[in-house]
Length: 215
Image 1 (cartoon, rainbow, N blue to C red):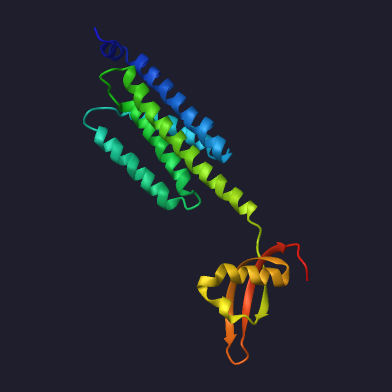
Image 2: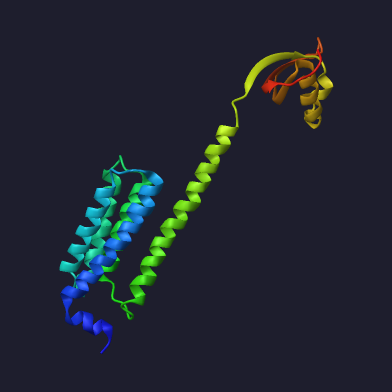
C-alpha cells in the first residue's frame, strides 16, 4: 500500500501534514525573507492569517468539481485587492499572491510522491523568493552606496577666452585648462553662449573641490 493511500485513509492526518507544511513555508517566506528585507511588521500578521484562512477554505471546499472554481475565485480576490488597495505596493501584492499560491498548492495539490513532491515544489517557491530578494536588494544597496559616494557638484559661471578648446574633441584639454586656471577640479562644462566678436564664451562649470596648484 502506497503512502498516498495511507494518508488518504486518514483525512485528518493528511490535512494536518499539509497544514504544517504550509505554515513552515509561510514562516520561511514571511518571517525569514520578507521581514528580513523590508522590516515591515504591519503586514506579517495579515500574510499569515490570509494564508491560514485560504488553506482552510481550500481544504473544506476541496472536490474535483469545484477546484477550478476555487482557483478562479482566489485570482478574482487578488485582482480586487490589487485595484482597491492603493496603499499596497506591487511588491507587497506580490507577497500576497505568493501566500495565496503557497496555501492553495499545499491544500489542494495531489502528488504522485507525497513526500518528495511537496518538498520540491515548496523549495522552488522559497528559493525563487530568496534569490530574487537577494539579487534586487543587492542592486538597490549598491545604487545607494554609489549615490552616497557621489558628492553633489557645485557650479558657477565662467567667462572663457580660448574658443579653440570648445570643440567636443578637445573636452579633456578644456577641463584641464579650466582646472589649472581656477585651481578647482572641473568635472563638467556646459556652454551657455559664445560671443565671436569679443572672442569669449560664457561657460557653466561643475566642480567638486579645489585642487592644489599655483595662481
